[in-house]
Amino acid sequence: MFEIPSLRPETRYGIPTADLLLYNREYIVGYSYLFRQPRWALQIIDKSTKPHKEDKDFDRLDNFREDLRIPEKFRSTLNDYRKSGFDRGHLINSADRKTSEIINSETFLLSNMSPQKPKFNRGIWKKLEDAVRVLAEKEEFIEVYTICGPLFKIGDKIDAIGENKVVVPDAFFKSVLAERAKPNSINQLIMWSFEIPNKEANKPLEEFLVPTLDTERRAGLQLWDRLQGEKVKKMESKKGRMWSLKKS
Image (cartoon, rainbow, N blue to C red; front, top):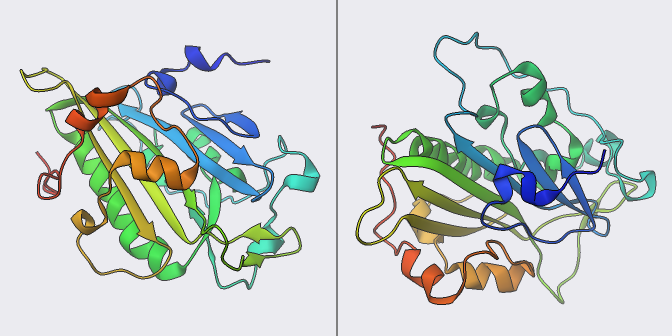
């Protein structure tokens, strides 16, 4: 069945281009045939996608597997990652998608994975994922959108893993767009964008904040293309104005 992107709630503020769009139950991936991994992954976190306290909790399935919707010649496999020294790093993380086992299981498709250094994946990247989850739990915001993906150095030597030559990213970006439940006189939306090198990092998350326009130029993507010009500049959070990591 053909899906119309504009009918998906995740795409309210825009959807970048990609070789192949992969629609999952609660997130969308823009896949790159060349890099054998996502160019980006887009999700929304709101009341409909958060597990309720009364819902039965479950352990993540860890059922990593190929995505058979991708042509075989452009697909990454489990063997590509095996003994590579890189984690199968989630773009849409398992902890964000826990309203059901099948929805959680979809985050383990390799179309949602990029090669990540273990200390990056389990360190600063997880810290950012946790921070976004805290943000989405705040009563101040009615919904939170995130788009993230790999970044590659143009002109530098390219490293790749496995028989299918899955390209190793130099860094990763994540752009976060939050909509206030009760818009104030200043703005209804607020945005944070991060670029973090694919290696261990011990700096505060605020040190990785960058202008969204810079990330778009480096990634070669329009992230929130339905938001234009000065409106975007005004809604971007500056260093020192990032949300608290403490829960409401």
